Image (cartoon, rainbow, N blue to C red; front, side, top):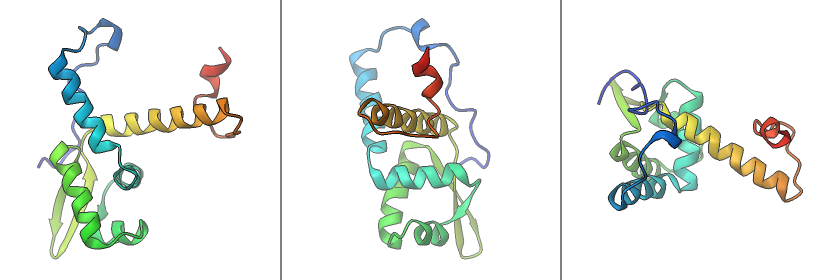
Length: 134
C-alpha cells in the first residue's frame, strides 16, 4: 500500500451537484457503511485518526483488544482501502490513508451528539451546536 495519505475523495464537487446514485453505486456505498458500522472498527479508526501512525501491539493494548481480534478488524479496514501498514523490524505500524475517514468519523460523531441533544442529553463540546442554532 502507499506510504502517504491519499488526497481522500476523488471529487470535491458538492453532493448536490452530483448525479443521483445508481442502484449499483448505492450497493457500493452500503458496503462501505457495513464495514464502518462496527464499534470496534470505529474505535480503531478514531485512534488511528488521532495518531499519525501506531504499532499493532500498542493499538491492541490501548483498545484492550486481543491481537487476533485486532488483526481481523484491521484486515476489514485494509480491504476497504482506508488503512495501510509499514513494517519496521518485527513491528507493524498502521495508519489511515484515506482522508475521507477522518471527516466521515467527525460527521458521524457530530450526528450522534446532535441526536443526543435532541433527546435531551447535553453535550458541551458539540461541534454541531452552531448549525442547530441557525
